[in-house]
Length: 433
Ligand SMILES: NC(=O)c1ccc[n+]([C@@H]2O[C@H](COP(=O)([O-])OP(=O)(O)OC[C@H]3O[C@@H](n4cnc5c(N)ncnc54)[C@H](O)[C@@H]3O)[C@@H](O)[C@H]2O)c1
Image (tube, rainbow, N blue to C red; front, side, top):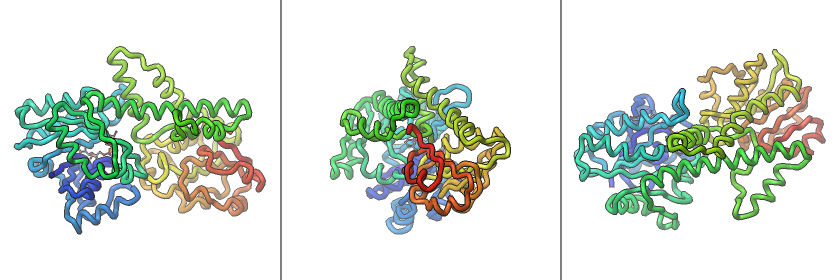
């Protein structure tokens, strides 16, 4: 089976490299020629643990993987074509911007000349995959292609493992032929007994948005519980532990913090609300979760400013810029939002992130970027833990204490033991504790 993947972002590149690892001849296509050149030289455009090895192995040893900037030369030979382009939020409305998807569909329609399956792996609102079918069928007889929805659930930072050992694979299709081909594609996962769920195209598209929206709501829920805990003298970490041990609830996505960010949750929640509105459904639960999340970052920043007595000209330390650990992705990062709000008040930010500083430099935020966490913590009024990178968990706070007279910590991710830090002289503020 020959595969073509359109888009070499976090999803497209991982998908391509992992399908090559499964043994499929795979070509990944991107409009960005610099990116394609870098990839052909085994240079990954982003940080993701394990991807360099897979790239090297399948570009040079097995030669199962290749990269191209020419869609026309790459898709006509493919049995399955995956669309993995971005679906960001539109600038004015909250709905998903599908322009990249429509462009990809147009280009596919101009370039296929034998039966193939066109798969939406991008996160797309219900109805999109059928619209792709309409676009392609203007040029190609419907007997000569099928469309399938196969949403992706990988998480940046553990993307390869998530792709190779998923909790489930969702296949939304409209006939047995395409369903059988997709099941054959995922046969390597049968060995590890991965549930493969076949459903309609519409259900598949909704499953993806409903899953992300549910997890985002869970985060807003525990964050609101955290606010209550702070008022009543409870500890949200104990509360989450006590709740999460109940199998009906589960302990995942029950960590109080600065709110959800990243390239998926904020945009997917907004797009799902927008889809509901278009269908006369008032998705009030999700709207509340979204609103709470947006306001939370302002509330947290104001709280830091007032508790640490920050004013114009104050200097703070911000550890972590990526939206979560083990990625350099800063899209909708809560750390950067805090940085922006602080900067608007004339506060200077010294920061360090193990992987995301190059991306942060491209943003419109003035940061003093340091070469390590200790340097970033020197001589500031407050230390903010924005992202829970492992290397921040074991910092030597006696060393930090000697270089920071103020000794105030806002641990937005609850990674430290409050008592230990207070015992050595820090003023410690956790989240929901
Ligand atoms: N990032 C994640 O963790 C994640 C997880 C699951 C699902 N998703 C979904 O997957 C989709 C892709 O996300 P991403 O983070 O990989 O996006 P991304 O922005 O990192 O990458 C998209 C890539 O597609 C390329 N592209 C756009 N139009 C093209 C075209 N016509 N031809 C060739 N290349 C084209 C762009 O140049 C870019 O490199 C989104 O819908 C997203 O919601 C993302």
